[in-house]
Length: 489
Ligand code: PFF
Image 1 (tube, rainbow, N blue to C red):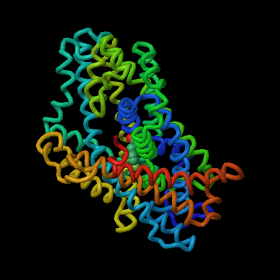
Image 2 (image 1 turned 120 degrees about the vertical axis):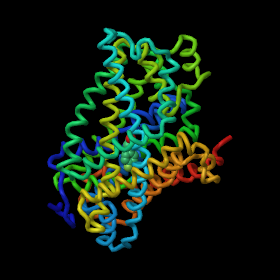
Image 3 (image 1 turned 180 degrees about the horizontal axis):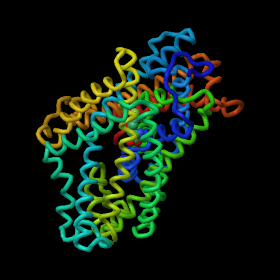
Image 4 (image 1 turned 120 degrees about the horizontal axis):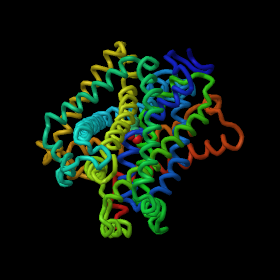
């Protein structure tokens, strides 16, 4: 059923709840649980958090509304929705490039996202194993990995990296589940997974956060995350990281929210729904910090913790925070085996609902474009993404020294990091920038205003943000992201 001003034909979410859960499921993922705490940790805690919230409100939410508006109007794949809106506005259908770049970006993210999804599955397996020995050894109330030394636990990620077969097998499993869900369709697959997994995710997330606050170093975490030196607030590097993270976390500039908006029914209030998606995603990112750092800090010696809090020593960064520091920290937490297992199951749920969205963006386009069934398209595109991801995963072993693009921001990066950089620093910002310009300046205002559910002052504010602030700020991220040397020093 098409909306009042909609053209084309597509499946609809069966309820607003399903739409919100699927969109929140796409937004909440490894970006919130792995990337946000790591970025906050390496960018001065509080300053990053404050600027991040600013970016979500001033840039993320307006672009999110713009993307869902385009989707609900077009009722088709992201690319077709933009070109329909362009035509109806008397403009060139080539504006569809805005969605095409984003869709390609989402596809490339999928290739490496699934590799990390595979690690999550692997670590869930490690904790299942550990729990089985804790049950048989009667050590369930003690820390995880009883009797193992912490260096061995810390090196589990490194060991996995050295084991190419295992890594590819886990990546294959994660991708197979993603393909299966997308192949079953919007209401039969994507929505079913979202309405079951996301509420379960929130329950687990709440339980782990409360546990972490009660048993971990909570006060230290608060002072780490929410106190800041005002000078760092104006540090351009901190600002750029916060902006990039906000786009990635809200799944913007990746054609996804256009794609999911196309399945929204005519009576869905898009402004309200965008607000809900944005606040859920941001709360999860910030609360993830409140869940992870108390566990990590509690496992540190008092001296090390003091050095970390005073900024003398950095907090463990990047993927190591979740897959190396955290497992070691569970060794000293009561009930560590069970909590560790629940933790990785929770991360798996979040990662799966995001990878499903990443694949759906291109499946919805390719199946129409080439007139192939959805399930066949999901299998073909999923297998291709699997192959690219498998090659990229060799960056952690045999291809560690293969750094094929020795220039600019790609200099010194292996394939895995190239995929992350080209998508996060180029494709997503370019797509979000084009979407903002398209909705702010090119598309017919009457069509846009009939879809967005805003009026009066909020409509005027949104129009200002999408036409002026968003393009300027996103163009700035893009520029400084490509030429980082200009702001160093
Ligand atoms: N928003 C997801 C996360 O935070 O993990 C990742 C993501 C999904 C990014 C889809 C981009 C995207 F198109």
